[in-house]
Image (tube, rainbow, N blue to C red):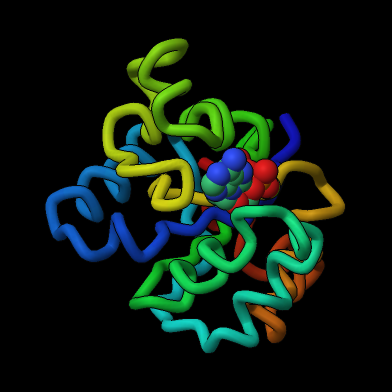
Length: 155
Ligand code: DAT
Ligand code: MG
């Protein structure tokens, strides 16, 4: 069994509602993720633009960067076997109304408001996980974590 790391965000719409924030935190625990790091923060608009640079020019880009810097969010480094895929499956499709139709038990289907205010983010590949973990937790070293901390969770 190989642990994989992913970067998960609870976006400002979900952090704004205490019960939804709590439900999503519980969802992480229920799904056997190890919470490696956790950080509550507010983005400046420039952080938002940098993180979502790949979407620059898309019709939803302004809305997206505005929303992501509109209030507090919570970022997690999560570890699990197949963490990247598993978290993305729990989130469900990007578009909330599609999620409600095709996968009603997913996070976005249950708690999402709109295609922009869709509750959560998850890295979509090992490369993006690495980039996104460094974006939020520049001081974090995977190697150090594996050597110094991860064994503590094995039992
Ligand atoms: P995901 O968050 O599922 O990885 P993405 O990377 O394609 O989706 O897009 C990043 C975010 O941009 C997404 O969570 C919400 C917003 N977004 C994407 N497509 C959108 C659309 N068609 N309308 C409104 N917002 C959209
Ligand atoms: Mg994405």
